[in-house]
Image 1 (cartoon, rainbow, N blue to C red):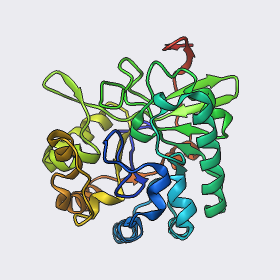
Image 2 (image 1 turned 180 degrees about the horizontal axis):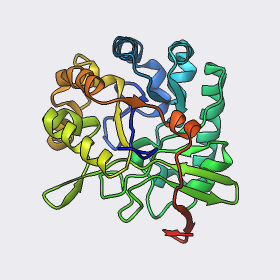
Image 3 (image 1 turned 30 degrees about the vertical axis):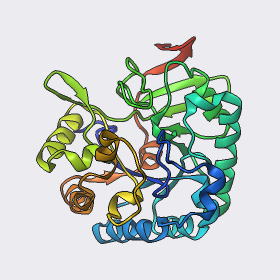
Amino acid sequence: MGTPLARCVFSVDVEDWFHILDVPASPPYERWDALPSRVEPAFRRMLEIFSDQNVQVTLFFLGWVAERFPQLVREARDAGHEIASHGMRHELVYRIGRERFQQDITRARKVIEDAAGVAVRGYRAPGFSVTADTPWFFEAVAAAGYAYDSSIFPGERGHGGWPGALPVPFRVRTPMGDLVEFPISLGRLLGRDMYFFGGGYLRFFPYALIHGKARQVLREGRPVVFYLHPREIDPGHPRLPMDPKRRFMTYHNLRSTEPKMRRLFNDLPMTTFGAILDEGPGDLPDHRVEGATAVGA
């Protein structure tokens, strides 16, 4: 585990309980302000846990949250956490197209920077919804002024994914500037690449398996990217109607989230994406996007 990239990064997509993708009952953007929000108490509970455990994390704020609750951004900044962007309106990248995506992430960065009073360097797409059919994605992110991204899921998933994408951090060269990509970490189980380190997977799999797979990824010299949402430590939040499989992945075992977080913080040293960039990620493979396929430069 001696390489610069063999680190654990704990990240949070800071959004509210109703920001769930591809569910018919999910309210449209125009209704969000009228809904009862629970992001403040849930997120502050997360901040308490981070403080108790003496860890710094990367926080991908949804622009709507930063605009409506700028004090949360400032509290997180004052606690030493990295402030990053999750876009403005929580829309799937492959569904909204390049122009609307560019507007969304540019506005979000400004809103979050205005709330934080610090530069925002990182971006994460809602639902990791970057695919081989969005080759313009990296150039758009660079054009909006971001320095790194953590949106690539190098396998199949419900919201697309990018099978065949590099499973290790890489540098993307675009006409608008360079980006460092931190893809989501996959582990191997029964001959398959699987995700263990966030969301419903973190709540579903037993802790021993999650910890063991994290150690395995670190031994391979790759970072382990954990992610959660504030609603996942708020078992009492309202539920949206959805099909049984999706309901299970969204709401199963919410009471296990906080104990697992604390065990992870006790057992694994954590850092932020920004800290890895500042310390120097080492030599990264160069990539460019050609057509709809990411290929080595």
